[in-house]
Image (cartoon, rainbow, N blue to C red; front, top):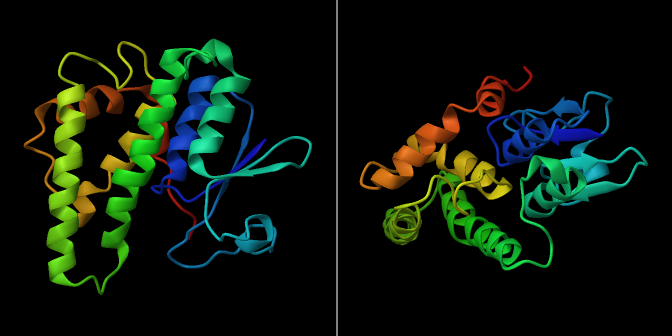
Length: 202
């Protein structure tokens, strides 16, 4: 397998998941801040017409896109890693619930801040909305080590990477003590340390 990633982006969650699963894979790094040219000369759009990462290339050449789909594919391909509850269980549905929430409410919220021309009024609105979302996450982590309970899952990997953007946008997570403690636990995982140390090319 090959994971096409831009270190520090949401694709780093898929990188964490592959390491957690003990998968045999090749990491293909891009620097989306400079260009979208792959090491072999192709353009990122050649493998993902949507123009972004992650992209997971399977051994048979099949290409998967969208972080939420790739994370669950990795978990299902390597069930012994326990990165997701078994299909058909209420716990698996809870994982879907978390991934949907992280994708649409937190990741999408932070995405607004990548716009250098974001009006101040819109910035205040997005910040207020994100604070409400993090208040919910904080309440859910009150008596849990991880989002689904006592096991690290792909949802934790995804949320951790998105939360790592908060200093870049001057978004203050300090009011959310349970989130801060959760971040600290996640950051101590060897896989997370390896991914955080991965630098983009150039």
